[in-house]
Amino acid sequence: MTHGIRTDTHTPYLNGGRDWRDTATRYALLPLRVFLGVTFIYAGLDKLTDSAFMKDAGSGSVGDLMRTVRDSSAIPALVDLSLKNPVGLGYAIAIGELAVGVGILIGLLARLAAVGGALISLSLWLTVSWATEPYYYGNDLIYLMAWLPLVLAGAPVLSLDAALHTRRRQRAGGYR
Image (tube, rainbow, N blue to C red; front, side, top):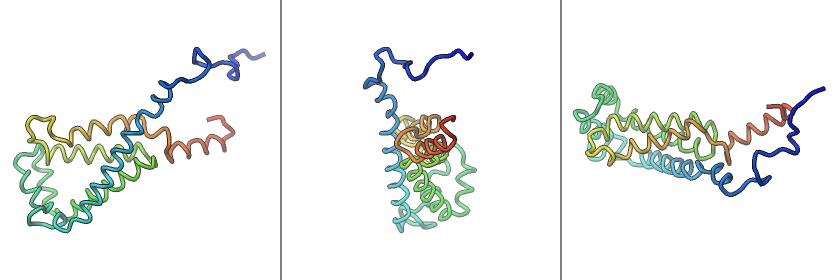
């Protein structure tokens, strides 16, 4: 004979159902996902469509930006490395921002997308906005901190990750 709790009659909630706070908690990261997804998609597309940005030199170019921040960055060696191919770096950042934005917005490989977003934000903070005084005026640090909850939690609702998880669980007979 097996003893246990009957799950068809037991609920962890005192009133037998969920209230608005449970729903709010469940969807709490959704506004952050939408904001970061749209922002990173926009940033990536903006870089890809800006002919001045994707140049080695000239006003508004990624090359000039890197040369400008080189001496004030936390890791000048990282800037020196990027200066070997600034246009390649510009494309890498733009495509990375686009991939991260789409991934987090639709919730596909959301934790991986969030790690990518955090790494992009970290690299920009350590190079471009490192010298910002006071530090909290620099937006790259704020973006880095905004990515961390998504690295930890992923996209548990309204996402392809959640849909795929549900589908796998159903195929396994509901035992996952």
